[in-house]
Structures are given as structure tokens and as C-alpha cells.
Length: 229
Image (cartoon, rainbow, N blue to C red; front, side, top):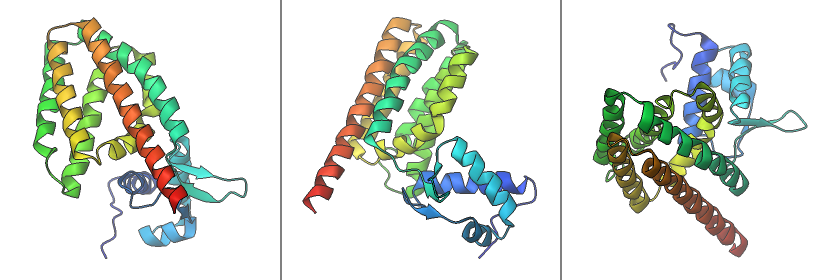
């Protein structure tokens, strides 16, 4: 097996990136226990860079630590969905409104292009296409947020970004939902091109509320199935 660690980045940054990617992709299961020594062997590195990478992922809430200092992969919950998407509903509605007013034309064009490109991957069931679709989904929102030109708003949304990526993957698991999201992004981008800040804000709010309802329904169905078993 090839060593995934390369020479052009610090080792702990590479371990961090690899661990983060595997958690987001679901290669490490939610609530799976992690061991520093095992990860060090897996990546053929010492425990020191693994420890630093874990510290970084704890800051992003992708890895949690219990009272006995045992490490676990973040486990999505209905409570987190409620809280994260409540924040996004307010903050991203403001971001898209500011984007409509302040973004340069080329920035708006990039937002629209990103939405259109995502349609190429909606119908695919291949894992790499699914991941690409999630990346484009995130990029669409990131471009809007950055184009708001409000640094404090950007920082607050950055704090939610990583866990939002986890939930986006869940949101994209359903084909009809993938298509709905892609269509909504294109419609929102077209409204932005027309500089309609009020309509863009309303569309973003409804878009995120729809995300929240879809995820909460998913969690409730999972919980009901577990109770039946």
C-alpha cells in the first residue's frame, strides 16, 4: 500500500486533511472510536503529528473526546441539525442579500456557473461524482458568503462550515433532493444576477429551511427504525 503522506506539506497538516476527508466521506463511521497509535501506524508517521491533527479536528467538532479522554468520530444528531440550520437560516439569508448588493458581476457569474456545473453530477451514483457534487454545493454557498464582503459574517459561518459539509452529504443521499437543491441554486443565482436582494434572501431562507426539514425527517425515520428493531 502506498504511503499517503507527501513531502510538500507538514505531516500534521496532511494527517489532518486525510482524517477530515475520511470522516466526511463516512470511511470512519459516526461515533467510531479512534486510537492515536493505530492512526500513526496507518499513516506511517509518529504519534505527534496525529495528536496535532486530532487537536485541529476537535476544534472543528469532527472528533470528540469523552471524560475518559477516549476519541470518537463526530456523530450527527437532530439537535445539531436544529441548531446549525437555525444559525445558517439567519446568517446566510443576510449573506445572500449583501452579495446581491455588493458582489462584482464576475463574482455573480461564478456563482451561477457553479450552480449550472453541478447539474452534470446530479444523476450520477458514482462515489467520486457524489463527492464532487457536494464540493460544488459547498462552493456555491461559500462564494455567496465571501461575496457578502462582511468579514465578521464570514467568520461566524466558517465556524459552521465543516459540520455543514457532513450534513450536506446526508442531504445529497436522495436523488430527488439532489435535483431539487441544484434547481434551487440555479434559480437563486439568476435572482442574484438581477440584484434582487430581498428575493434572494427569501429564497436562501426557504432553501435552508427545506434542508433542515429534510434532515430532521431523516433522523426521525432512522430513530423509528431503530426502535422497531
